[in-house]
Amino acid sequence: MNQDFIVTKEHRRFTEFANAVRKEKTIGICHGDAGVGKTNSARRYANWDTLEPYINEWGPRGDHDAKHYALANRSRTVFYTPEVLCRPKTLMDEVDHWQARVGICADEHLRTLDPEPLKPGRAAHLVELLIIDEAERLTPVALELLRDRHDRTHLAMILIGMPGIDQRFRHYPQLYSRLGFSHHYRALGRDELLFVLDRHWKRLGRTLDPDDFTDAQAIAAIERITRGNFRLLERLFPQVNRVLKINQLEIITDDVIEAAASILVIGN
Ligand SMILES: Nc1ncnc2c1ncn2[C@@H]1O[C@H](COP(=O)(O)OP(=O)(O)OP(=O)(O)O)[C@@H](O)[C@H]1O
Ligand SMILES: [Mg+2]
Image (cartoon, rainbow, N blue to C red; front, side, top):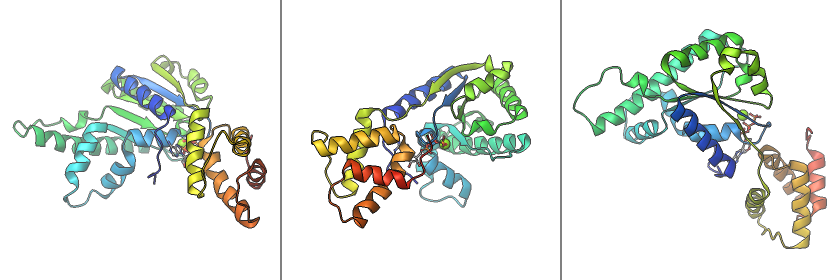
């Protein structure tokens, strides 16, 4: 899904946060505005774009197994998105399922390194981190089950949600008192916005020059409209392309950006 993943500063901050939660075997929350890139970062951290389809298939073993085993061993993370009306029992069953499978893959890798003693039951404990996206979907019962799981097994957890989710968890003192870290996932900063815009300009077959007056104005308009939000940027550029084509324009000006933005429904 994401060949174009850009390793942003926010992604590196997320990685540090996740490593810390994992090392401390605690529970962390990651919150940030819609569309800033939380899900993408977390999936990337868990190598989920590669592991999820492999584990889902769970077919006859083949040539590329070793690669996936090594990856599972390196990430030792389960990424999970609960359904909208998810039942707590289903949630826990599915988490168990993914945890077991990632564990088995990691175990296979460890066996290639140390074939000697069979360590029964090792696979079950190899996963170190559970990341739950869209955590506002979790019911109080589900949160309680997760907390209980954390207490029993010390599985590190990250709950990802919208701003305010940390406040919501205040209503669950037992969970709240276990929270180790709260991480605010932010929008792109100016430097990175420029970097991302540079790529968008190239994709449209143009070169961005922030020192050029016209480009600087276009950049300012984009900054104002998107506020460094990844999703808004991704949605804006197809429209920019359209506006250029329809009007047979060559240059991306602030007027072009404004026209493109006016087509989009941009919630503010
Ligand atoms: N690091 C990145 N590199 C390239 N594109 C990205 C990156 N992060 C996010 N995007 C783009 O931004 C869009 C939104 O990202 P994402 O779905 O991760 O946001 P989110 O914070 O999880 O939003 P929500 O709160 O709505 O779930 C993605 O579809 C993707 O196109
Ligand atoms: Mg998301």
